[in-house]
Length: 596
Image 1 (tube, helix red, strand yellow):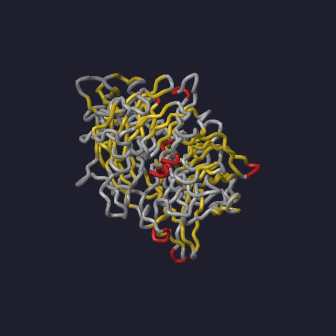
Image 2: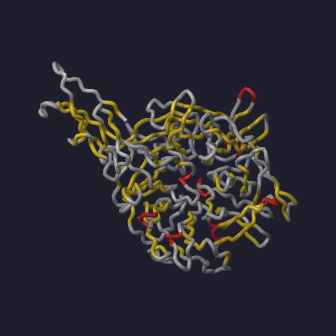
Image 3: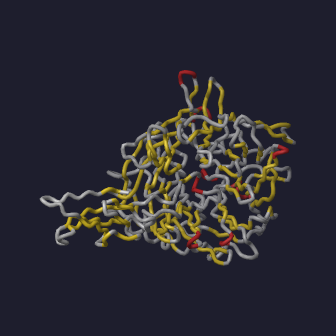
């Protein structure tokens, strides 16, 4: 509501209040009382400016007016997890402010940047309308850094208001982030603290995050549960991550908090927090691990533990930073990368469907898929498990295959799978028992497979998949009758549309914003400027495309000069929320939106 007042000079005559020339207004534009109290409409498709007028009752030619721009709160309550949902679709279908007509270099750009104490590998998360005692109600963006900090920034304040900051280090007591030299890898440098994207439980106002530290000459990885309002530990946290599994070859395999990389985003499903582990650029010795914790009691040990290669080696679960995905039954899906695959129970190069067995404190393998050429992929270092497992809705499937999943490999293979019958392993020379396989080749280099390092996104309104492989354009593939409308392997995949630009080196994990089925925009970060150490990388480039035709680039942030994002972070994913786009970089949270 807004209260208007009119003063009529040299007269006691009253005024008639109007909204857009209508006395008293109407439900579409808002109403105003005889005393000047204006009430905005219940809903609007886009921001709207209305005119409030005070008209002299005795002479309608005498009036005064004021313009009011109405921006109603969005129905988008928050981005609680990596790419917004447990299926990893990347959709935000409640974005009313950012449209293909408003996102261009004239009306859209960088608004501000908020400095942080370390590199931001984790995707920023967003929660609207958080009430903080003594500080009011705020939209908040939560940012985690490799310096082991979690920030709660006011999502809209250009002064970069820090509502709270929690640090997991204490140098005075010899608790610090791990250094890359301690691992012997330059995969993440110079320090390693929080890498995997946290996850938020809105029902308990809790943010879960894993922090890596070096404490009094001991390496630790701990699962923390932070109150969204205060940043304080809750639910008995932190849990010191520990695990041991039996091995037919080694007797036992113990979780190594130094060599294991908590790269994958966290998953919250059915009240459990799932944490997966990879390596630092294949720096041995390591395994792939998945652990499940009771989100309401971190004093307990892990509810279930799984090791992908208990009798072998490697098999890390990195997925380009993507989270494990979960279906409605509570089963989770992960992709293990290079390592041992054999009949002894080792599952590298494999998509796994896992189910918690609390009685055994373990996971049951419900189903799996391993490419027939997994041995070749290992030798060529073109691994499976380079993406998250995208779960498509029933509307995308067919009567024969109602529940579909999508996963990719560094060899340029995009697999469409029936997740109720994943296909297991077919002896060479195959073929794989999947619904469809696309051979993705790099544009401009005919016949060369494009490494798929980013997880494809899915927009239900157009039944379309969007993916950007390394050294390739962003491509759109449509689904129809449960398959992708493109030639299958060995023919090169043929997209419905593609972007003008290529995404070098790392590709991208795109996200989509729309207002329901309208105004679809595909957002992707070009992080090819990443060069390792903080301060040496070039700026990340935020790109936006019309989701109905990727040939139409709506916006690209500058690569130099004024308005650039901070230095690029590989595998970074933007967060789109309520008219703004949040980008994690090496030294700041870069915030883009509609220009004043």
